Figure (tube, one colour):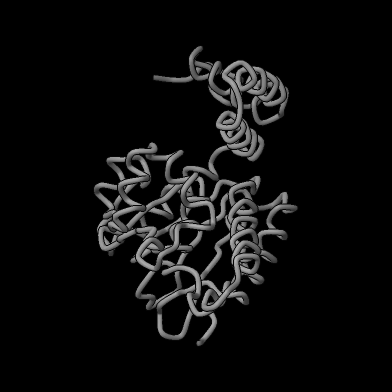
Length: 266
C-alpha cells in the first residue's frame, strides 16, 4: 500500500501539515506516524510559528480516512496495546503543541483520522465532510484517544451514540454538538480557513500561546486552579510590549488622540 506522506510547509507565522497520497485516500501507517511525529517535534520548539493548519493535498478524496487497518491484522494484545499507545502519544503531541492547531476537514474523516482532528484545537469542515469512529464494526473501539476527546467535546451521551452505532457525523450536526467549529461549502473551505488564520496571526504570539495553554489546562483541573493559572498568565501578558502598545493605542483612540500625538480629527 502506498504510504501517506506528510509535508510541513512554513509561511511566516503559519505552518501547514499537508497529508498526501497518490490515490487521494489518506490513511495513517507507521511511516506516516513517524513523519508526523518528526514535524510535531520540530513545531514544538519553534518560536516563529503560531498557527498550524492540517490539510489534505490537492485532489484528495478524503481528509484522513484513518489508521492503516492492514497493520492491525493478527496483532497480539500486547502489540495492539503498544500500537494504540503510539497513536495516542502522537495525538497528545499534536494537542500539546504551543501553537493553535486547526484541522481543515475537506472530506471523509474516519477512525484515526477523526482522532487526529479531535486532537486539534479547532475543526473547520466542508459540507461534504463526514466524520466517524467506526471501529466497533471491526469488533474494536477507538484506540487513539477518540473516546475521551469526543466525550470531552460533545458529552458522554453523544460519544456513546456515535461510537457504538458507528454513525457518521455530518458538518451541520458536528457544529450542533460542538465537534465542528464552522462549516463551509466545499469550494469555500480553504478561503474560510485562510481568513480565520489571518485573524489569529493578527494577535500577538504571547496572547495566542498563553490563552491556549490556560484553556487546555482548565480542562484538566478544578475551577480554582484554572483561575489561578489564568490570573498568572494575565499578569505575564499585561507586562509584554504587545500589551503595552495595544492598551496605549486603545486609550489614544478613546481620547481622540492621533498616533502622532495630536488630536484626531472627526
